[in-house]
Length: 113
Length: 113
Image 1 (cartoon, rainbow over the protein chains, first blue to last red):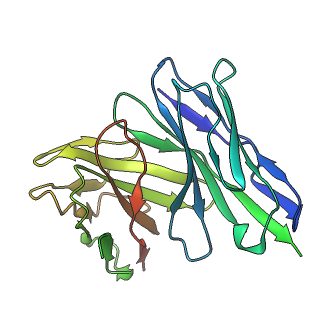
Image 2 (image 1 turned 180 degrees about the vertical axis):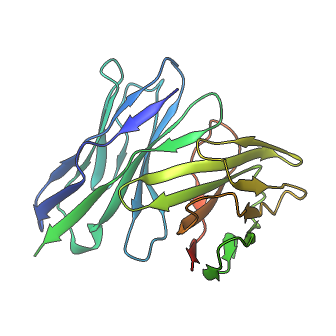
């Protein structure tokens, strides 16, 4: 069975600085998707970024980028120029061939003004 | 506007009572999911459905039941067999398998008194 591990329950970063959130996963599949979702205090989950496993190029969405290391089964999220609105829970997620989408336990990110 | 509607937002239940959480989407998505969120546990998959009249158990299906009689609707029943039902429940949908991006509802908070 696939698993997703986020080893950092909480992190803090100074406003305007860069922070990296870690995620590792375990799978025997070669074709899958990886995601980072954001859950702000309103609890409305929104997609931050998506990575297809067959693509070697790391996905980027404005200030958000990933470091996808397929062999190491690592999928970290980098947030550049951190803003107060980035404060939230961040969840790493995996979707494989069995159609299940599974999540890690999350990392709570605090932005320090 | 298209989206996912969960109701009720807050629900109180006495022990021994079944309760049904509603999830409706007008996005024309094939797949729908139910997740349970507890502090420090992330999102755990309860049930998911890829097509009408078909659904699969997730990782924590015991004590829950679902139906998928219409594409737009995927109600979740929390039965009296669920030993610890107090939690935040999230419904989500996606276009189809291996395409990714879950669209989430705003969630339902169930409290058992």
